[in-house]
Amino acid sequence: MTILVHHLENSRSQRILWLLEELELPYDLRRYARDPKTMLAPEALKRLHPLGKSPMIEDDGRVLVETGAIVEYLVAKGDGRFAAPAHRDAALRYRQFLHYAEGSLMPPLLVLLVLGRVPLFGRAACRRFQPMIDVHLDYVEGVLATQPWFAGDTISAADIMMSFPLEAARSRAGLNASRPATIAWLDRIHARPAYQAALAQGGPYAYA
View (tube, rainbow, N blue to C red):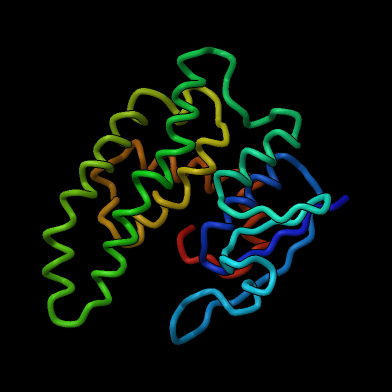
């Protein structure tokens, strides 16, 4: 049965399309545009799931939300490709970054986005908040300066998960050439044929 992906433009769900392309799993795509005034997901998604969130997939009678959960589901469906490496330490790094992406790195980036939309005091608040994000960006730079991928020598689903927050950081949170290992990692993922195929399928995506 083909996987149905409910995909919102300019969102975390671009990672799901990338993973599906890497795993060569067949899927159908249903695209959704953000509300032009609020930039929120449309009401149509709430008719499919109470949270009205994307990414969302339907497969074999199941409806799944949450990027990390969907990624783990697809990795298992793809016979373990892009899964945790066999080496114990690499497997631990894999699990750490699989959860770090949304658990630790993404929240301050969302706060920065919200602060940037606050009139008058928003910019001043962003300047005070930026050092908190820099701690994360320095940490990531230190990791990628010693290994090409987040779990070690091989690309994995941990890299899929880390892509969106680091793309967002490059767009609006100060990630630039001063952190060359992270920029080189972004260049590597963007050059992958599966990544490019996912962009062609997904439509508007501001962060690539």
